[in-house]
Image 1 (spheres, one colour):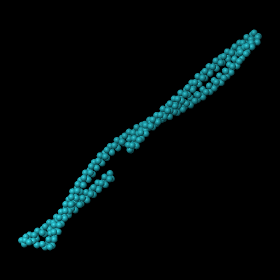
Image 2 (image 1 turned 90 degrees about the horizontal axis):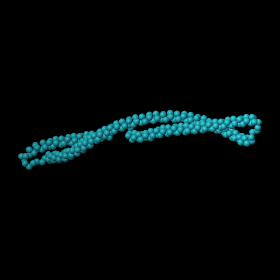
Image 3 (image 1 turned 90 degrees about the vertical axis):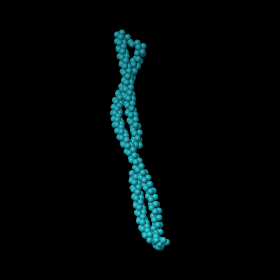
Image 4 (image 1 turned 180 degrees about the horizontal axis):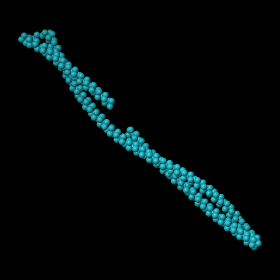
Length: 284
């Protein structure tokens, strides 16, 4: 797991939590508003129905009172045997018709209000069902949100553990690479020093070899030409020394060649070892 991706996932997790909380709050607010509106409508409808019922009762009481009064007047007229005064007919009959008409209107309004009240009651029942479903959805969202939060906390704890392990691993690898690099630098310095010393020794050996070759060539030429020394007494000594000197020169030459060959082999071994170390570093 890379630190960047983990940090990116961590940065994306808080918006999910905020969205869930906003949805829960919006649903709760919508439930409360719908319930409040439904209860207000139901209450106003009940109050209007109560007012209409009270008005109808008052009108019924007035009509009953008017009928009783009319019956009482009829009884009086029957008792007296006289006709009904014209002013009573013109004054009381319109009032009765108006009262009956108003009573019918109020009854119709009361019936319409009863229908509205029934519809509002049905609407309130539906709103209760919807609120119950919304409440269940809110509970499910709360459970899902808690589960997602626990999962997020578990993932975050796991990511922190992996990050600590990765940091320790990187630190150990970095220390190991630094130590290996120091060893490589030290080996390279020693190799260069040994190479310089070997080149210097080879140069000296070559110079000495050239010098000995020249001396050997000179001795061989002297032997071939047969140079005779002037002093007859020293001729025996010179003839005896020259072969010994030639043998020493030949032996020295062989030693130098052998040493040069050993140095060359040692240099080749160092080069091959350096190439192996370089290949190993590249593989790592």
